[in-house]
Length: 339
Image (tube, rainbow, N blue to C red):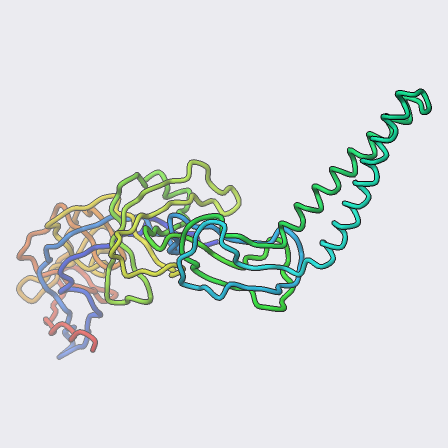
C-alpha cells in the first residue's frame, strides 16, 4: 500500500530552484546564491483517485447465460427500463412451462379434493397435503418466472450509457459488469486518503488536481464527502472531490490530488536544498556564513522562512559538502531552465 505522508506544494516564484553549479577557480568554490523569493505557500494532503459520475449504476446479470441480444448504445441517452441485453432463455422457458403445467394439475387436485371432502370421500389430511403441494408448486413457478425476468437486463435509471463491456455470444457470469449507465454531469473524484492524513481533511476545502491527460494544467475541485468509516485493511478513508461542470476531466481518468489544508500568501521562500539542519548559508563579501532560521511550511521544492532571514540576503541554493563558516566562495550564474 502506498504510504503517503502529508504532501506540501509551494506555489510561487522558483527563481532559486534547480541544481547548483560548483567549480573551483584558484581553489575557491563557486556557488549559486540569490535572494529569497515571495510566493504562496500551500500545505496539502496528497492522494490519488478516479473520476466518476455522481449518479451512476453498474448493470450486471444475476444469472449465468449466453448473450443473444445487446444494445449498441454507448454514449446514447436512455430511459429507465430500457432493454440493454438479453440472455438465452430457452431452457428457462421450457422449465417454466413444465412447472406451470404441474401447478395447474395440483390446482385441479385441490379443487377436486375440496369437493370430495364435503362429501366425506377424502380425509382432511389428504386435502391439506394437496393444498401444501399446490402452494409449493406456486412458489416454484414464481421463482422460475423471476429467473426468466432476470434473463433480460434493464436500465435501472434514466441516463447515458457510459460504457458497454459485453459481446454477443459471450457467456455472462453473475456479477460481471456489462454496462455502466449514469449522468455525465456532475462529476467527482473518488480518492483514498491515508488514515494518518484524514484528520486534516475537511468539507469544502479547495483541492488542486493533476492528470496525465492535462500535464500543464492544475485543475480545481472541492471536498464534498468524507466517508465516516475507514478501510482497516488499506488504512485509508474515502474522500469525494466535487468537480465544476466545466472540468475537462473525463469519467474514468486517474488523478493526483492535493487537498489544501493551509495556505499562506506572500510567503518568504528558499529552495529546499538550501535549508539544512535548521539553517541556511548566506554569501557576504565573498564568504559564506551559517544562519539559523525558523521554517514554516516545508515542501519538496521550497521552504517558507518565517524568521532569521532578510529579503536582501544572498542564500546559497545548494551548499557543497564540507563548507565551513567564513569560507571564501565565488558566485556562479544560476543554471538555465531546462528546455
